[in-house]
Image (cartoon, rainbow, N blue to C red; front, side, top):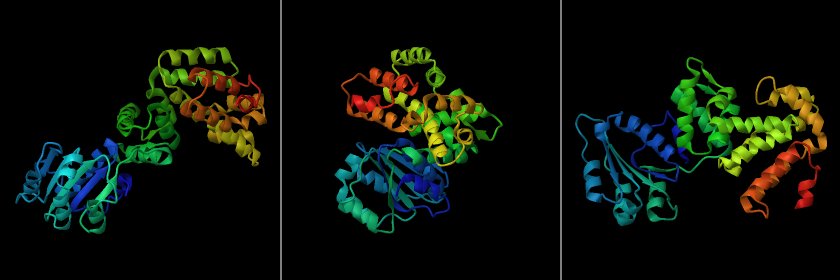
Amino acid sequence: MHATEFLDRTDSAPPTGVVVLFGEESQLKQDVVRLLVQSVIAGDELSLGRYAGKDVELKTILDELRTVSMFSTGRMVVVDEAEDFVSNYRPQLEEYVERSAKGSLLVLDVKSWPANTRLAKKLAAGKSGLALECKPLSGAKLTAWLIARAKYAHELQLTRDGAALMVELAGNSLGLLTQELSKLASYVGDRSRIGIEDVRALVGGWRAETTWTMLNAVRDNDLNHALVCFDKLMIAGEPALKILGGITFVFRKLANATEASRSGTPLRAALQETSRFPGEADAAEKYLRRIGRARAERIIPRIAETDYRLKEGSRLPDRVELEQLLIWLAGAAPVEAMAAAG
């Protein structure tokens, strides 16, 4: 089970026995532990023990688990970085999974959890405990997590476009996204909604604003200004893939509007549905009519080709790959230039 699924099941009975948190995403592990503290020991920090796996002995952990105060509802012990602990005491932990201390919960934080070990199989087969996957999120799952977190942590509605833009600007780290969400919650004040305008204003700083200026210049046929902005971003050390992420976020919407218009939706209506910000439909429509349908229908494949070259290696520097893409998007290169170059 992925940790996000567990976190969503707020009405479930708290787990008993052993919970294993495996994966690299520390924010998910923190969220799970926070929820377990509330559900297992009713938020009583005095009933929580926490140890570093490389330093603690099994006897210390078992003594903790078997010592439940008469003033508490249970006992919870977390072993952080528990790889060595699991390796050193695997047979004993196999026995503990079958006969865990009543009213106590052992949480093991590990990077990996091979499903073919006896310990993993015993945990999966028993009624006492579970393993939760805490691996990084991406795509729709990441934006869904961000929207849900805005709701339960801040009682705010984060729009889907706002969540998508946060990911493009701040990356996939849940810890960093959590920090940015807290900033946004303070920024919007008494308002109940975080929109794309708020994200644009607060997340990403001058580099994000320079990216929007660059892309607006591409759209408005001011290629010289676009390349000046691009040069500033590259000199500042902005990663090529992050710049491409901003390009993708903006021009994917224009491509989607083009596709919708091909299916019968009037272009103007399609643009009003997909426009990033209010009032931009006019400029977007002018751009699409200027570059023509043939190029507009090639936007997504052209961006995908650049993404592949940046990730898999190209005979051209990253700067040149992105410059060529911006020139193509501006309409200043043949429609099939990329196919000919490949």
